[in-house]
Image 1 (cartoon, helix red, strand yellow):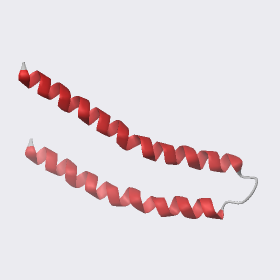
Image 2 (cartoon, one colour):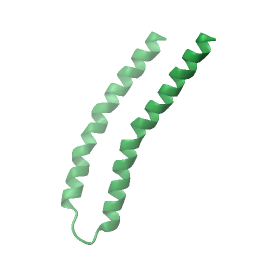
Image 3 (tube, one colour):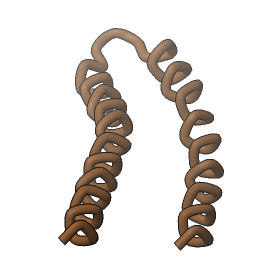
Length: 75
């Protein structure tokens, strides 16, 4: 169990640096966008919301899993 946890922690720490690197790219694209590109900015906002919501969904699944496993072991 501990090996699985630490390997997942290591994997997610590698992903973190990749995801953070993309923020500067979004900023550069948003700054270079001109007038008349409202559809582009709506897509960019949707992408930002997608990146923001994904960790919360993963944390929710993890919390539910921990809750159910603790409840199962208590019975």
